[in-house]
Length: 144
Figure 1: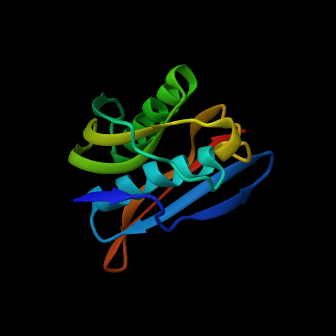
Figure 2 (figure 1 turned 60 degrees about the vertical axis):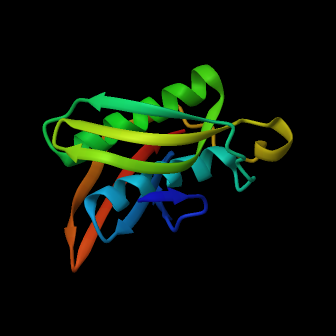
């Protein structure tokens, strides 16, 4: 299933950094919301208009929290090098150590996204991705 901005997420206070937490019914929905939570922070609340798509094959991490961090790092790398922000995300495959996501990207626009967070890195610190209640919860800390 493809998820698009906006998606619910919460900011978690963290000394000198910012945290991001999401919930989903499945691990795939949870990862998609995590990606789109990062996108919303990068966009600063501005609209992201899809202009293209990319399929990302990401490997890394021994468990789901580390795999989620690897996916977010790839998304942040694309933002830093291509100024692309995800507008929609579909998780095609997810397992510890690998993920495949299909992203619809929009271009960063200074006028629309000037209030976006200046995210420097996605950290392993306090990374979490686990079942909670009847669904899943994930969180990461972003270095700003």
